[in-house]
Amino acid sequence: MPGKIILVTGATGYIASRLIPLLLEQGYIVRCLARQPERLKFRPWVGRVEVIPGDLTRPESLPAALQGVDAAYYLVHSMAAGHGYHELDLQAARGFSAAAKQAGVGHIIYVGGLANPDENLALHLRSRIETGQALAEAGVPVTEFRAGVIVGPGSVSFEMIRFIAEQFPVMVGPTWLRRRSQPVAASDILAYLLAALNTPACQGKVIELGCERPRQYIDVMAEYAQIRGLRRASLLLPFIPPALMAFFIDKLTPVEYAYALPLVEGLQNDSLVRDRAPLGLFPGIQPLDYAEAVRRALQELHPDFIQRLWLDVDKEHVFMKHEGFLVDYRRQKRNEPAQQVFERLARMGGRNPWPGADGLFRLRGWIDLLIGGPGLRGSPPEIHINSEVDYYRVEDIQPGRRLLLKSELKAPAQGWMEWQVTPLGEGCLLEQTAYVAPKGLAGYLYWLMHLPFHAHVFHAIIKAI
Image 1 (cartoon, helix red, strand yellow):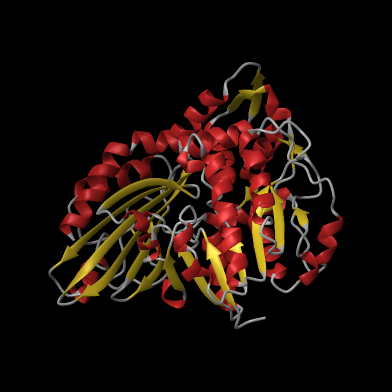
Image 2 (cartoon, rainbow, N blue to C red; image 1 turned 90 degrees about the horizontal axis):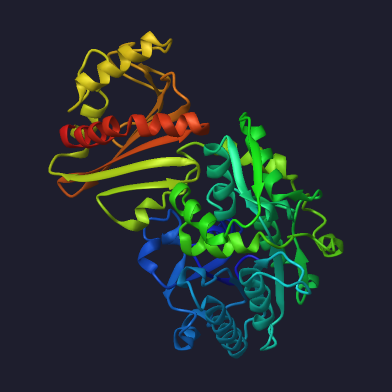
């Protein structure tokens, strides 16, 4: 019922950061427990929630967060801690459960891992299942959703699939990639999490989530590639150690080694829905098939959909791989009015020079023209949405605030340049973000080939504007 106080733990995480705005839309009062609350300050919803600093491994920090809470989402894990994360998970779950019981919390909702607990499981999966059991020890009713591969931009498992399938014409892996999985759309998980608040019958239940048809892990990657329009082969070999796979995942995808290793080890187990009957508690939710979930995720390959996690880092320059993009973010404080800076942005290109790197921009335009692209097309005296600016097209212009240009270069990648100007006293903050979404190995080679050009140009533009 809207108006209830809902606690969300792990507020900076993938599921929680997408769940919070949905809770707010439905009228709930949202409280966030965060170990690093400063990482939330750039989230668009932060002003509408109560943020409580706290650490689940420190029980003394929990009562303030749980006071008056009707239901709590437990959306955390300790994999980043490395060795010993299993014990930390159990310690945190037991402490949270006891504190929730003492505070009178009526319901805990948890997302764990999808696996058969009767099998010899990898530590990551065993930890997720035992965490669910630990949450129930104090007697607070728990709804435990179990999920395997979550399909959505920013999901660790989906980004592993995306970046590997994009970069490798031959996907090499261990023979246990023939193990089976039933992926689930991120939008479906969010729908179940919301519905659980108003479905009393789900309390005390374990609910397994996954698409209807099981797929081998290698086929999950191959099907992504097919939907993306990429031709891929696979080569599965025995005796490839998980640590080696995790090393390459760390280097080639956004997933760090500390997360990659337990996830890779978990691929040695099937991740299958054994009992679909509990899904009948939610008749209004029709889960997507894996292929449709991938298509919808790919529709969000655009700067307007991306979660701007680089802002959490709070640095002047950040480069990161994120949600299918290679992102180059830079910012500067300027001692000029925001409107004056934006007017220079709106005059770039065409009959005017590109600030700081005009020669390189024009050279790139001539090369593009030679290979069949639009080249340097000029620009109108005053730009608006859909205006051509040399080999860019204006996708969004908010006078004094934002300019978004989409590249129309002939290239195996999509690209955008974005500038945002925010008034700061008598000056302003200028933010520049370059987005490149490579397609296939050719797209990544294209990025590497242009890396010196990009590094110089992105630095020169923001300095010269």
